[in-house]
Image (tube, rainbow, N blue to C red; front, side, top):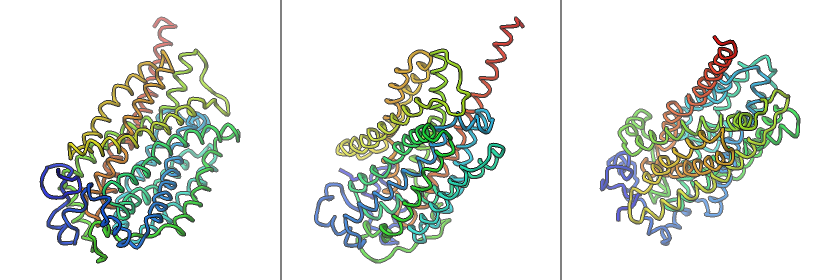
Length: 457
């Protein structure tokens, strides 16, 4: 059976490295490590080659998980208190959708910059600088007066600097610490942080706002935790040599010119197809993550005929429930995706993309049913959201793993950056804003329709 790490040209998709001749030129063997060899004595040589023990490598993954968790907590804390934010700045759905879109746009634009730096400079220090900047800007955004919504948008855009410096680099560090199934497991741990962090962001936003009586305090939680993250990176994270785990030698790899990296990635069908597939996931999750709590609140108002919240502090029970669902579905979906793919791979070497495709296709009807039942039964809506999010979460770790085993070590940060740029440019950079505009237009025409019916126009 062909291994997914076998770069020989035995199948057209998701087994072909960037360029076999180029891989040989930089010293990476075309056959990295078969899964059945994972527990062989040679596997333990990985940590000897990197100079980092297995225990320290696991600790590094734990720290990277923690930072990833904070990034997504901060991003979706805003979504958890969106009604208060709209009330404070006196904005409508279209403008509030810009909060997420501005962040995604800066994140998307800066990702290639940090991808270039991450393939050439010390990744640990790049992350430290980015996370420090992100923490300071996030804290500053919580003190902006309600008259300056444009300034709030600017700070949310600058927050993208921190996440771009981190998301493009952290997976490549894990790739240099582990191989084969160990890498898949560690990536699944790392990507647990996405749904779990999103869920904790909703929970933190709702609970901190309720406790403090002011939504601004919800934005002051993650900056303090970000300082701890920087200290952990400085004192406990070591920079592994690029590609040592795969080339089985301590001879350093020389990076190729950036334009050559980009050309090779564009010619890599496995990378391009997985990136385009993940773009569709980003479009859905971007809109869902920002608008689902507000949508559920409005569904409750319609279902129970209650008035929308105009108080200083609104009831965030739905944000709390949605956050807990997101945390749970993240654990279930990411873990299940990795395990299903691992077992299915024994009979089909293309298991990874097939599992991702099945998860995406099967999630669509359940998310649609969640919308349909929103004005009939909130319980049914939550059940369908739970199933849909679980199926959608099958993708997170698998897509990252696919990128790492079809791209050579010296251009992985660039590949991460390109995938981030494309998936956000065509995905969640526009979907929150588009949904907000559609919502604003629908509410406007609904009010016009009501007035026309009242006055029999």
